[in-house]
Length: 126
Image (cartoon, rainbow, N blue to C red):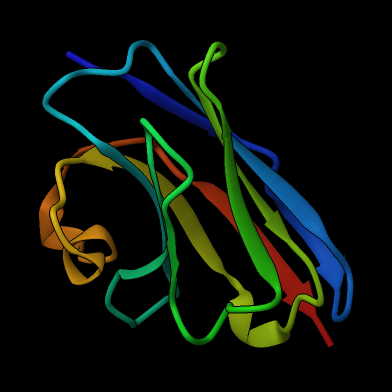
């Protein structure tokens, strides 16, 4: 069973930056994508960014394009989410997940992912 542990959350002012990290116990053949998701109070969990573990293919939600960058260190089995120009609307619990996707839509879909981390809180104040 793959285990995921997120870190790097915190509180920043609007316009600031944070970098989230997600360490995986292993990269499984059953999971070809690592994704970042977020859930704000009272809202559904939504896909933010995803990266194919075997290559450089990445996908982003429209709301974060140009501000967030997902990357990975394959040897360390760690995925990062660099978040710049943060807005109050980015405030949420951020989750890392592992799953198997064949399309960009699937890569950003909550239902695709079967392994989840415990989450890390990001709070952006105005």
